[in-house]
Image (cartoon, rainbow over all chains, first blue to last red; front, side, top):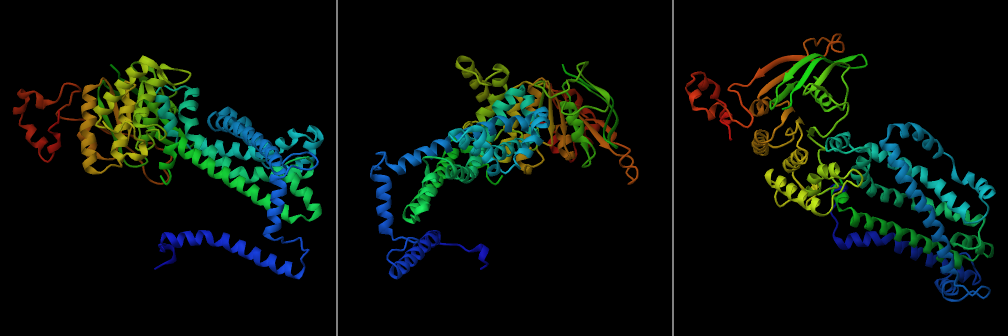
Length: 272
Length: 274
C-alpha cells in the first residue's frame, strides 16, 4: 500500500501523536541526569525536583518583598496587555477590513496604505514607541497592535473580496442597501474567519508582548524570564516558557471551539 | 405588467465587442430562454438586465422607464451557484429579503411582523417542496434543493422580472425534470416575466415561450474581437404558451389542427403538466 493511503488504528494514532512529547521529556530527563551526575551544581538542565521547588516558590509562596504570588501577578499583567492588544487589533480588523473589502472608495484610500504599513518591522518601532508613549502599558499594547493589526486587516479585506460577487448582487436584489449588505451578508460570513485570523496571530502577539516586557517592565511573564536569566535560573525559565505555551495553546483551542459553537455552518462549508 | 425593451444595445470591454446591436422587445409575462454557444455573451446580457453592468451604447427600458443602474428588488436572480447564503438556514434565507425590506437598519423584524413573515416564508418553502428542511443550512442540502431554495428566496420579493443564469445546469436529469415542473408552475402562478440563460436547448423549449439565440456571425480570428454576438434566431414557441392561462391543450377547439401531430411527435414533455 502506498504511504499516502496508510490507514492507522486509533491506538497507533494516539501513540504517534504522543511520541514527540514523550521523546522530548525523556531526552530532557536523560540530559539533565547526565549533567547532574557530572556536576551536582549544574544550572543548565535542572532536575524536575528543582523545577517543582521553583514552581512552588513562584506560584504558591508569597513573595518575601511584595507578598504577591509572582506567577499569577505576572500572568495577570501579561494577559491584560495581550487581551487589550488583541482586542484592539480585532476591532480594527473587523471595521477596516470589511470597509476596505466592500467599499471601493475606502479600498482605494486605505488598501495600499495598510499594505505598506504592514511591511514596517514592528520591533524596529519599539524604541519609537517607548520614546513617544513612555515606558508604561500603552507602548506595550501599541506594539502588539502595530505588529498584528495590519495583517489581520488585510486578511479580513481579502476575505470580503473573496465572497462571490453573486452573493452581493443577490442581496441587492433582495432590497439590501450598502449597510444591510455589510450587516446581514458580509459580517456574519467573515466573523468565523476573524476568529481563525486571531488564532493565527496569537503566536505573533505573544512574541511582541514578551519583547516589550523584556525591555521595560516591572511585571509580566516576559519580564520575569528576562529578569531571572541574569541568575541562570533555568528552573524558573523552563516552567514559565511551558506556562506561556500552555496559555497560548488553550487560547487557540478555545477560539476554535468558540467558532464552531457560534458558527456551526462554517464547519459544513469546509472543503466546498 | 412588465415589459422589457432593449434598443440598439452594445457592450464592449476595451477593444473587445461582446454584444453588437441587440434590439428586442420582451412582452409582459413571457418566459424568454436565451441560448447560444459558450462565451457568446448570454450572461453579459443577463448582467445588463440585472443592472450589474452598464451598456456601452443603447438603452434598456423596464415598463418604458430606463432600467436602474444597479440591481434592485424589482429584478430577482437565481444563479447556478452562490445563489443562497451559507450562513443562514433555509428559513433565514427565505426571510432575508422581506426582513431587509422591512427593517432598513437592523435587517430583522420582530413581533407580529416577524411571525407573519415566518408564516409566509414557511408557505413559500412548502410551495417549492422544501417543507421540513426549514432549519437546515444550504451545505446540508442537495444541489436541486439549493436551487429550489434560491427560487423561493428570490420569489419572496415578488420581482417583476426573474432572471435565471443557467440555474438548473448542474443538476441530474431526474432532479432537473422535477424542478422544471416547479419552475413552470411558479411562472404560471406569479405575475412575472422570466429571462433564462441556458445552454440546454431541450430545457429552453420545455420552459420558454420564446427562444432567443445569440450568435457570433464573424468568427475568423482577426474578426472575433471586433464583432460581437447578435440575435441569430428568435423563435416563438408553437403552440403558444400563455402564462397563467395554459396552452393550446387547454383549448380543445385547436386540437384538430393537423399541424399539432408533427409538433408533438418526439416531445412528450410538451404535453404540459398544468
